[in-house]
Figure 1: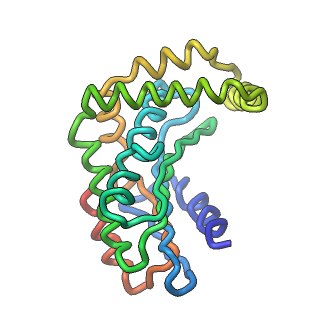
Figure 2: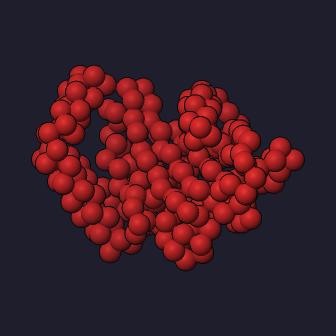
Amino acid sequence: RILLLVKLRIAKIACAKKQTGPRLQLLPARPKSPVLAMMGIKAYPVNHSSKWVMYVLDRVLGGGVSSRLFTELREQRGLAYAAYTNFEYEAGFGILSVVADLDPKRWKEGLEIISQQLKLLRETPVSAEELSQVKEMLWSATEMRLEDTDFIAESIALEWALAGRTDEFSRIRRGIQSVTAADIQRAAQALFRKDNICLALAGPKQSEKEEIINILSIL
């Protein structure tokens, strides 16, 4: 129920047209429950030339158990039970969601790590080795899903509804392979800004709001 509430709130605040700093919503949660963090970052729409860049960036940041957020938050520091990202687009806008179930005693540290990872992508290019691995994993996952006829039908219908056309799967692969480290860094610099971020947290107190804003201020 709390997850649904967070999703509804973040959907409302993430599409705001103007903001000068991060938008924040704090929601109640049961005592000792994980702190659920859902960050919405306004991104590119379906027809934007950087759509493929967002798919790769999404995979680098939080797309799987080898992603940066999962590795830092769960594997190395034990700060989260789950951590992932998801890029979705519509006709006029896109949203990169960052989701984490954070340790209720160390959630501030977890939020700091998320902010630091966003800043790192903005300041430091992805290595050639990491980029190659991410592209291969992304295309391998896509190939596996192409065995699902429901996925194919849904993808074609969605593209036609939003863009008035559909991408051939050979074009998808070319799009993914064409992404460079400079493309990813450029997108991160354009999008990972405190005035382009909305955050919903289930668990923290209203009195902690200012501290949360300060954590996000590194962006």
